[in-house]
Length: 305
Image 1: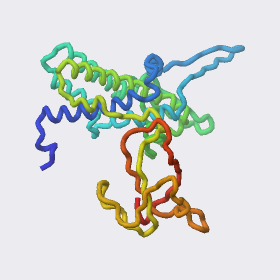
Image 2 (image 1 turned 135 degrees about the vertical axis):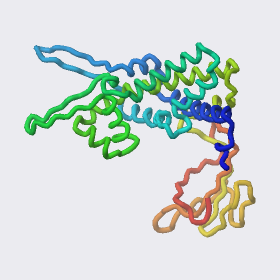
Image 3 (image 1 turned 120 degrees about the horizontal axis):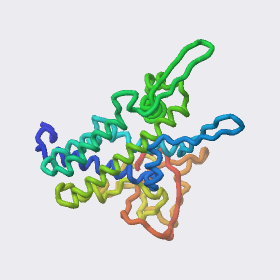
Image 4 (image 1 turned 30 degrees about the vertical axis):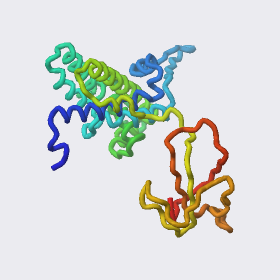
């Protein structure tokens, strides 16, 4: 019998809320959320209109596609029903826990209704707008609402290559798909962060008993450049690899030092890396380089790691 089959209802709700907190904090750490007012502004379909010599010009100012794409990747699990961090699962868990607190229960109902309208509208009219196009040479006409266009970008262009989504949205072009996706991604981020803050408040008030680790655990890298204190060992091809992280190194492994001959890692003809490498880290970043610094590329080693 699996753990989920034996867990109590309270344990299930805690598991779902903790999963949501971890993913929501990663969404909160995204660069788009750094400027809250700007993120909220993106949830609205804003256009700039000017008339120049009798010609109407419409312009849009949106974030770079790569930025929105990474935000969509971070938010996606919160949109999926099968994920533990699914937004509606978190709301359902809170609804059960706060059932005796009228004010909190009302906030949860409102949040659930708004999420359904914005993220999963039941009719095209709820999507806000739709686009109609026609081929003047063939007479063919197509139309698609904003939600359909946004989904075509998310699941056809970004996180999947869904042929049905792509077929549905191809006629309208990448710009229309992206333009529709930006408000959806931005609003999903806003709704997620607002719910995260609501969970934080309930937890601090003692209504929830979530583990502190889910609020403290690192969920996103602030910098991708760092240095760690380490010990390094190397061995030639064919050497026995270590069996466990804490097991003694087998025969043939040598400690890397300032005097080590790193030429043993290069093939005498091709110059390609050879051998294996073991790195043991102290888990403590180092502010300055030590006496020995070496950088050697490694392929997939045959003899060790």
